[in-house]
Length: 288
Image 1: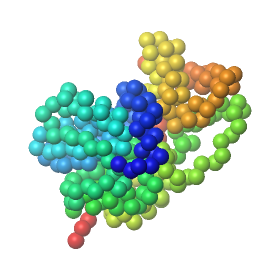
Image 2: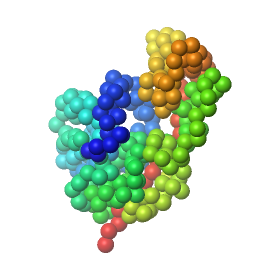
Image 3: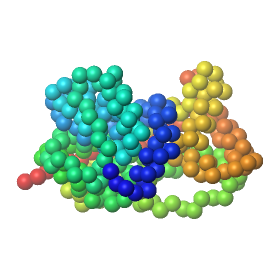
Image 4: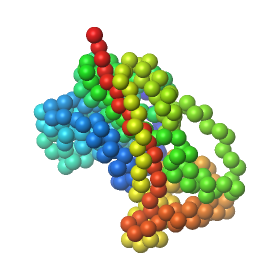
C-alpha cells in the first residue's frame, strides 16, 4: 500500500470509525451499489477486482454472482477494514473464491491481463494521479474486460453534504472553495473529467449514466431515534464530518441542533431519508 497521508488516515482513527459504522454505511449505499452491480453484470466463472472494497460487502456480492468457478480479489488501503472483511468472509461467502489484499490499487503491481471485470463502489475518487492509477488498473484487465464503478455527482447534488452545510450556514464561517479536481469523494462529479481520465488511461466505450435515489440515512425504534442516528452518522462518517468535528463548545451544540432539525424534516416511517445522486461509469478494455 502507499505510505502516504491517505493510507495513514485509513489505517488510523478513520478506518476504525468506518469499521464500527460499516453496517450504517452499507445500508445507506445499498441502492447505489445494487444499481452498479446490475450494470456490471458479473458472470459465473469471471475474475473480478473490487477496488476500495472496505469491509467486503461488494466483494461478497460479486462472489455470489461469479460463483465457485470464478474469483474476486478485494483491495483496500485500510487494514482495519480488511481485518473485518476477512472475519466476515467465513459466513458471508462460504465456499466462494474470495480473497483480500492490503494494497493501493493506484500503484500496486497487479497481475497483468488477469481480470474480466473491474468494479468499485465509491472507491476510485481518491487517486492522487487518476490517469496513472487507471492505467495501472487497465493493465490488470483482460482484453475485452469491463470497468464499472459508481461515484458521486457534485456535492451540491448530494444531501450527504448539502443538508448539514445548509443547516450550519451562519453558525460557522464558510469553508474555502474546494479544489474540484483534488482527490476526494466528489472529485469525479464532472463527467467530462471522468471521460478524459479513463480515455487517457486506455479505456474505450466510456459511458456515464446518472443514478439518483433516496438513501436510508438514519434508523431507530422511534422517529427521534432515527433522527439521532442520522445526526451521529453525519458527525462521525459523513463527508461533512471533518468540518463538524472541528467545532467546539456552544457552537458545536448549536450546529448539532441545527443538523438535527434538518434531518427531522427528512424523517418518515422507516427512518430518515436523504437524496443521493451518482454516476454509474462503464468502459471497456480493447487491446490489439
